[in-house]
Length: 296
Image (tube, rainbow, N blue to C red; front, side):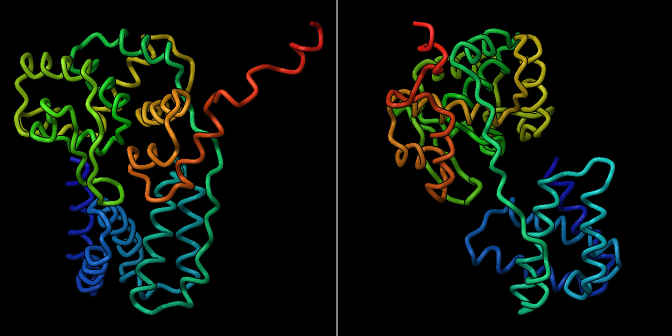
């Protein structure tokens, strides 16, 4: 459903804005040739389509005043979205680069890296979370995300054929960086998945949406997580991605090396994985406060 919405915005821009269609065609070609994912194309395309519709001219023809005014509007809106702002800036930056408009790239605002540490559930909180899920489908869904460190898009894209019960492996396709990878399938999760499949009879996708054979929507993953967090009484501000953060942190705490973890998570750069070293309680790190020693 989300993919369909993004496509509709792009199609609308093609129909309403003269010159948008050839501009988007060049963008699509460069994204594909660059090995980027379909999700990147849709996110960039949506943002470029919206700004083109706003001014009723292709984004490559916008001047500095128009671009800055639009970006300011995004940041000062009623419900500003940091991710949408980033996609807009990165999308425009990519668009201007492929059209040799280096002067416009320089004038775009730089975006600081988000240094905020991720929210992580403790092992006991994870157990409480899975126990609190009332519906079998939701319990298996959330436990699978944690057990394999999946992104939201990755669990939605999982097909029944991607789960190898004999080799105990899961084939992750259409990832953030458009690179397939394999992750181990827990024996416990394998039993849960077999029980779920026998009860729900999913078709094609491992977790179907409202109609048989359709893909589960983002809300179809986010809603069970929100409701189960409430039911479990967990006060942390946790999202679906928190399960992936917890997976990474717990593996480090259990002795896995960072490079192996990077490959399991599907990170393109080791620096992305290193953030979990700031969260994990490792054996060689201090596990006490100095005040505990003060009164001994």
